[in-house]
Amino acid sequence: MRKFVRIAAIAAVTLLIAAGIGFAGGQKEGGSAPTGPVKFTFWHIDTAHQAYWKGLADEFMKAHPNVTIDITVLANEAFKSKMTTVMQAGTPPDLFQSWGGGVMMEYAKAGLLRDITKFVKGTAWGQSMAPGVIAVYAYDGKQYGMPYDMGAVTFWYNKQMLANAGYTSFPTTWSDFLTMIGKLKSTGVTPISIAEGDKWPGMFWWAYLAMRIGGEAAFNNIVSGQGKFTDAPFVDAGQKLVELTKLQPFEDGFLGTPQAAGAALVGNGKAAMELMGQWGPSTEASNSVNKKGIGDLLGTAPFPMVEGGAGAGTDVLGGGNGYAVGKNAPDAAVEFLRFVTNEKNNAALAATGAIVPTAIGADAAMTDPLMKEVKSIVNKAGYFQLYLDQYYTPAVGSAINDAVQQIFAGTMTPAQAAASIQQTYEMNQ
Image 1 (cartoon, rainbow, N blue to C red):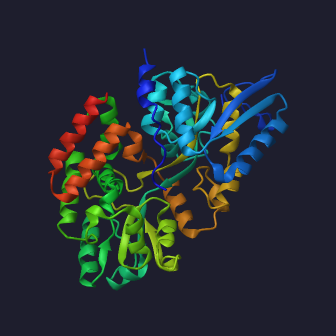
Image 2: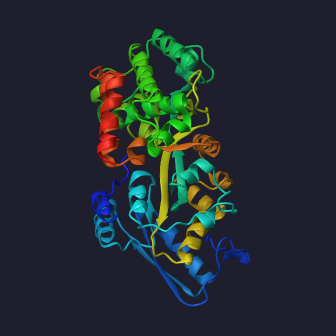
Image 3: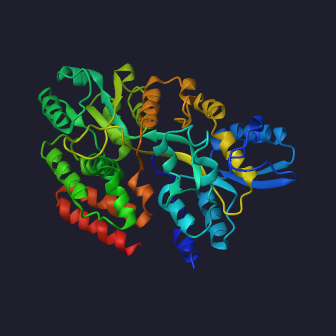
């Protein structure tokens, strides 16, 4: 579930480099309603909820008879293929599936996206979600899309195992977290399932530690060119991982464990916790022997603070789903995006259990208490950092995942890993 689509067109897009209108209620936010016929294209990959998206399109067109929405539904691989073709041709869809981050940034730099900042900034739409969540779909101070689903990477832990170690709540500081690891080991359990065979689970740890140590500025400095991955926050994050690894908190053979097997360790009560996205509980349950996981014994908590760090405890690493706006999209396409992300419609999809909604208030439709906690964590995020292997280009994302795995394996020092990542980053600028 973690492996979101990576658009193969980045190389082709690079070669090409050389508003919400308030129809509803008659309120206008940044534009004016069109008077003549308007048609726009809408591509999505949510094959499991086609009726939901079609229903929204039908409702919108009924309210605005001059608007026609041409919907294309594609599976992941077909979407990749068609996006490659249209982006090479410089003819993006008007509204299309996007996860923000590196791929979206490349499209923006190539002039393939529409700047919708005036429809979002300072409007009710822009205030309807956490600022950090909206920022995932922004680049260089400009907004190019909006999310409808955004979860967080959190700890998923066995409350009984923590209680046996003397903890009735999850630690809020890194030092206390390390102390807890020792106490968990003394009770005879495996403290952490990390499943580093798939590499990206370890990236979560390194990313969060860098966020807690360096804060948003550390990552912004990378993008602006004022900083490097060899700067202290990133090297220190690796040192913290070395510190953790020396405690031997992970499952046997963790460097080769795939994520599904790692989730099964938590789901079967064999490990006390994992650091994972919002899909963690369902993956744990589906891979457990009883297909139910540990039920009410499962808890969730944010990543702890690092004492003396510049990052806030509310800063979130995560990701989800949204839509980007193509360069030639009419205002009506922007308004439709505002329509599908409003509280009412966002809540309707959240009620199915398919998403962690982005609209503040839409969580009222959620029934899973753990997912409500994830939503609460996301709502508090002043800084929301997209998964690093999505935020950067695929080459840089892979370099991060590879280097972090080598820190865990002890085959690279934190400084060497940081230098390796920086080298790849510079080669891909």
